[in-house]
Image (cartoon, rainbow, N blue to C red; front, top):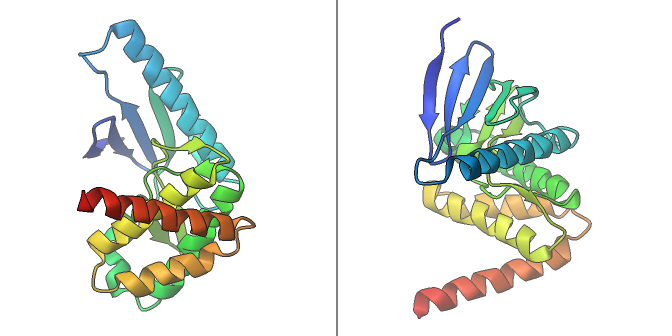
Length: 201
């Protein structure tokens, strides 16, 4: 079966193999080998754990198997990457509301995605799959959840600026299913205020 490298990031190489996707964490030559192996193993285990937990809540790639050290083999989601297609979808606002609902479900389970962009969301069979939990972690803090929302806001503004305001307003509408939405949205305002203060400084 042929294997194709479809992406290379700072942390991992993504290999497409039939109906599977292999995420292979890159060795870092600037780190001590024993430390590098430990970090890659910890991050692989953490991402696998988050994917398993998230799979009970929202659409995410199913894990096929996890290597003890650095590899995760998972289902390959063959759909439309929202970063490339969201602007042209007839139901884009409905999709954005779904995104907000799915973020709320993750946050109510104390899962922080850590890299919420439309590049990490794939539309397939009317479902929005969240991918790449490599920067994710677990937290009960409203601050961490607010920062997660701030990330998707920044991503929408940068990539989908022509429709940014209505797209993000729908994300927030969807997010209101969260039992803690009032607290998190209030904290989001504080996060944004800090951002504006830093830019002014």
